Image 1 (tube, rainbow, N blue to C red):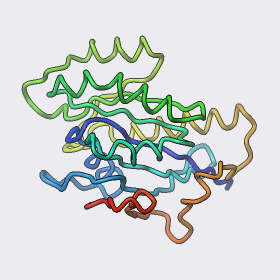
Image 2 (cartoon, one colour; image 1 turned 90 degrees about the vertical axis):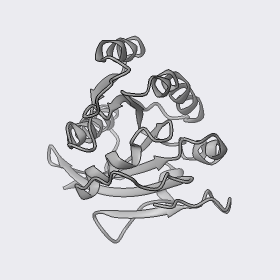
Image 3 (tube, one colour; image 1 turned 135 degrees about the horizontal axis):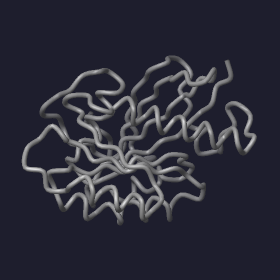
Length: 209
């Protein structure tokens, strides 16, 4: 089967559940308390869709201000953006326009974005579904609600992203494993599912996950 490399970057405020979503998707597990991501984490998973192998490069980024310059380096060449907020934290939703604009500005490629309202299993919801959906509609992007804890819609999220990117590649007539120079530097050759931590090219900041 043809193989396609898909670079997907997960962005949003700290503590909205970005790492938990990836851990649930990759390993099918959930940890109630884990270390905050420092810098950037990197995971890879193969997904078969419509007779094609999608090699998902999943970049888990830190949400803290002090890592902003490091994280912005990894926006470049992204074909998919997963913008995550916590439905119980109104401030994390207010920051969504910032994250979306920053990533789109830094990324020279035309990429697909999905807005994700996470932690739907939690009480005391602060952002209603209608408000988030209206924002997504206004910006022409898809909106999905998830729970990393219960696994609700986690696989559906990444399946939808992979499907959208593969569709675009097909429409553009891109052959298998055509990547830009940024992506070529980070292809994982040895395993179907891998995890690595990156230090911002000598910045000294590494992931604690």
